[in-house]
Length: 182
Image (cartoon, rainbow, N blue to C red; front, top):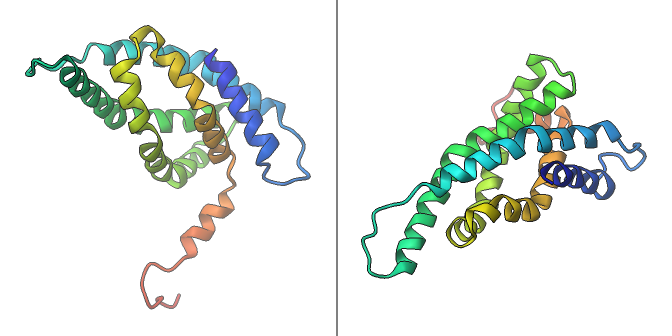
């Protein structure tokens, strides 16, 4: 299921947001997404959600809703502060390896994409994960995430396929004002 959804994200990315309108559809790129989702993320994700479900803070309130919400906040914080900073470069690394890129290309891709992707992740996932980790039974959490993540997978596919030139243009933007002459 997870592999299918990563593949679907790539299909959406290539069909509706092509880098070049004249470019041919890249079936190998979709296959790489399916392989990553099936062999890497589905395994790690199922273990991760089992781990998160075991995070239970002491019950300090007589209200079950307050206790449940505190646990959801703790789980979401662990998810966003531990998994996301590692999961994002894992995705880019595995995809780069499957694409046959060099270590230098991978390093460049991570330098260009990791922090900006993580910031977008933090704008998208915390609110959803708060709901998911607090109110969805653990056996269904990965499935719920997978359903919602089609758009995230589309974004990751687009970010992974982004050409180096855009990053190089960003590097040319002056940091100082007024710009320091080269």
